[in-house]
Length: 276
Image (cartoon, rainbow, N blue to C red; front, side, top):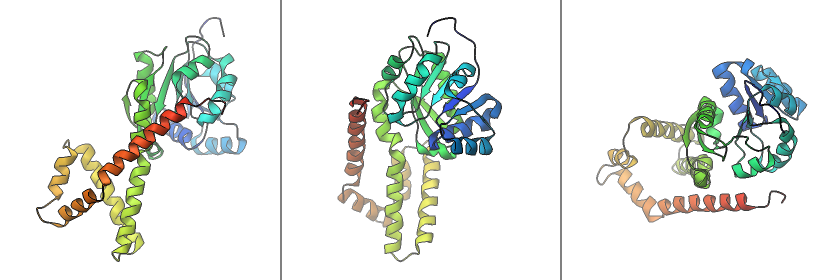
């Protein structure tokens, strides 16, 4: 697309799935529905988003004409068809922010007109409750101001960090997939509570609130996890016995192996031909 760069404002959230709605809700809560529109192919889902958040639903071309920032929240397998439809409607005055897992900025840039700034984001599902961890990386045409804008957008649903794009696969393994690791541990501990004779609902309450409290201590205390762990561990006590059992069963090594497996799979998916 050639011609003068137009001046636009506002954000278009392209894709109204769970992550798209989480981002949409955070943006609406921060600045109101007037600055945000949504693009959603399903009429039923679009009507649901309008009813729930008060946002206007637009077609892709109209949204690109009105909004400067295009937040792509579609599945990785839908990215190429979306970019093909979008290519004639964007220019270097836009900012494209992609939360499509595993899709490199170079692939997005290649499908769009020259000079369009692209920022890649790896969010995670706690964004659904405003406690997400999003990590942003700049593409070839994105500068500090574009990263600042992307950070401001993602801050509506949690914390944000910047990394070089080469580290995004490691980020995926740690925080992108990370919530599932914690859910897995919680599931196992609840089962252990049942094995020890507790009602399942009580065991779940105990484990979930313990997880919430431990996470808050990690975030707010400023202390290293080792210090916090040692503060709970009395010599010869119950916690020491439990930790000895965790080490004997290789839990630390298993977690490292899990992250390595997720990292390898992320690299594999990113290297696959997008037409497959």
